[in-house]
Amino acid sequence: MKVDGTSTVGASGRSARLVATSIVAALILSGCSAAARVARVAEPRSTPLLPSINPYDPSQDPVVTVVDRVAPSVVNVTTRTQSRDAIFGGDGGEGVGTGFIIRSDGIIVTNFHVVEGATSIMVTLPPPDSRNFEARVIGGDSDHDLAVLKVDEQDLPTVPLGDSDSVALGERVVALGYALALPGGPSVTSGIISSLARTVQIQDPGGGQDGQGIVRTLEDVLQTDAPINPGNSGGPLVDLAGNVVGINTAGAGEAENIGFAIDINAARPFIERAIADPEAPAAYLGVTTTTVDAGVAAQFGLPVDRGAYVIDVAPGGPAQGAGIEPGDVIVAFEGESIQGSEQLGELILAREPDDEVEIELVNDARGRFAVSVTLGTRPLPTTG
Image (cartoon, rainbow, N blue to C red):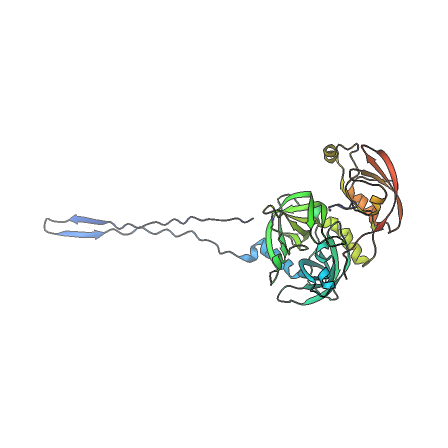
């Protein structure tokens, strides 16, 4: 998904036919004289050997190999939230999800919606380690459904981040996560990349500042037929080399074998910023965009064939306050021509909250115009 411009599940069977050859013994009777008869049994034909079948060696299975390598770094994320009932003496709620460790000193990536509104966050390593650690949020991005956590521990197992730009349609991938909050280690599903650069709307029932639920628009996500179930959220989608190419975020409830993962390259700038400057405020425009190319321009009838097309505007955000609307195309930022959403996102991340910037836009109805915007602070998961 690109938000603020940042570029935003199969089994095979084998059969073998075994051929059996029956042996027929024939009795041949021959007479040497009228008074004597001698019976002779024909020698049996040799029995052909059954074809040999090599025994299955799981160590040679690429899925088994990648799971052995990645699973130790996949953690269970458990959160406690303070519900309205808890404020008046009732019990708070509990949520579960998945995360994965990307640095041995305790940097963990998960989904924003997994930890949003949590009063406490606990991560648990898979068996046989099974240690528990308290975690805190150090960065992330609500529009990319991304959160970065930190635990105070060293020498933890890790999984490397890959390059999602090199992922091919039909490429085999593996999804890991704590599906349905089942005890034990992470569940494993495998499949292929079914589609690239999808734009999807994900319903988050408990999201938003009031906890009443929101719809997140995720752009440039990977689609896979590896099943992604509740509890898998925040887990890694890895290639057969064991590199993370996506962050599991949602399954399509109305359809089987359709799941979505956040493009890891879209998430990388936010991860790197959180590591370099934990909990530092990041600049925020408050738009969800997609890159304009000839196809997008034709689809929406746009007057330009480059720029960042505004899909959605965050309520109460800086862009809305400046008059930017869905359907506008951002074509320049502080005088720099905008070719697409990724470039726009990089320019915004290079600024600071409260910076005033000039943005040039094009709209079929309003023509070409410019607005001045005071950038806000990018929302992080609200934790108590």
